[in-house]
Amino acid sequence: MTKPECRSATGASTHAEHGKRVAAMFGRIAGWYDFLNHALSGGQDIYWRYRLAKAARPASGETLLDLAAGTMDVSVELLRQYPDCKVAALDFALPMLENGKAKKLKGGREDAIFPVQADGRALPLPDESMGAATIAFGIRNILPREDAYREFFRVLKPGARLCILEFGTGSKRVWKGVYNFYLDKLLPFIGDRISGDPGAYRYLAETIKTFPDERALAREMVDAGFERVYHVPMMSGIVYLHVGEKPAAGE
Image (cartoon, rainbow, N blue to C red; front, side, top):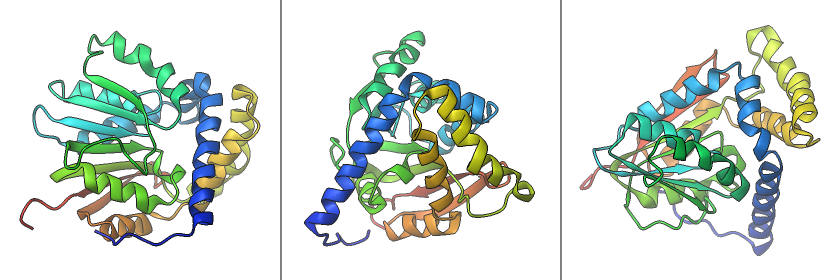
């Protein structure tokens, strides 16, 4: 696991302000979030989340962490695939969790999903208490990412998996540049018109374009102490599933 870094008070303050701005932004678009996810991905986001949950592979009866749970699509999918488990659904944006409550109630398993507002850099969970952890399209919103990796590593049980679903870097040309045009022009335009928030989907496009590529993200996971790290491209590398394991006890 990486050693704790010394950071200036200014840097810590900047990261805290960034987190508050992102949480407020997602709070503003919470009501449109699910619709836009499905529409802008052509429904592929459902399959991506299925793959994410499938990769978690927890032992029977474990409690699972779904960080940046949003409206709890991943939490519900985890429970669908692992019905004897429980899910701690954590997100910094409380309105997102509020909008997702109806989903967990529909399944009759409201006692198995626990939505909690929380900062991914300081999880309100005991050491080595989680049987797996997932985060879908959220790791790029946490600064510094090293803090989130450190917290994942702390709360996971030895041998448990961290599974990250995230966009690939938008700096690569995909589909002969068609995806890049979509990212630069269409995504912000459609998102702005439907959600009514002029900055939310511009922010999304910018964070995708500046995000590290899949190899760099894998190195970050290794540097944080995870092993058996691998990544799987989907839709020609527009999205990647990243998986790593906390070393088993005694390793």
